[in-house]
Image (cartoon, rainbow, N blue to C red; front, side):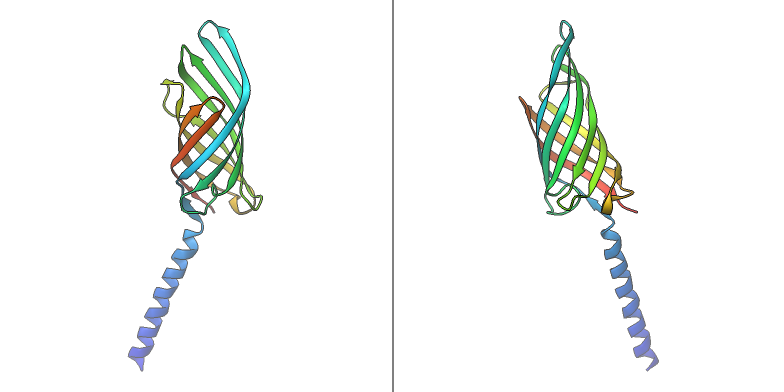
Length: 164
C-alpha cells in the first residue's frame, strides 16, 4: 500500500510540474510572422541630398503560430527617417499595437542596420508597456521590411515577450 501511495504521490507531483510549466508558458511567448504597413507623411529637403521623412503608418500583423500579442493585431505608429544621398542614417518611432480584444502594447522601434540603402529595413521594437493582459510586458520583436513606395511588407523574424 505504501508503494502504491508513493507512486500516486510521484505521479501527482509530476502532473503538478507539467501543469505549472503550462501556466508559465502562457506568461511568455515567441514571435514570428508577417506584417504590412501603409505610410503617410511629409518629406522635407534640408540641404541638397539630405531629406527627412516624418509621418505615421498604419498596419496589421499575423503570427505563424496563430496566437500571441502580434496575431491579428492592428498597428498605429509614428516614424522619422533621415536619408543622405540615398542612404538611411536614422529611422525610428513609436507604435501602439492593439489585439482583437482591445488590449494594447506600446513600443519604440528603431532601424538596426544603419547606415543602409533605402528600400530594405531591419528593425527592432522594444515593448514599453501594455494594458489588460499585457500589463507589465517586457520583450522585443525584429522585422525585415521591404519598402515599395508607401507600402512596407515585413517578415517578423524573431521576438519574445514575458508577462509578470
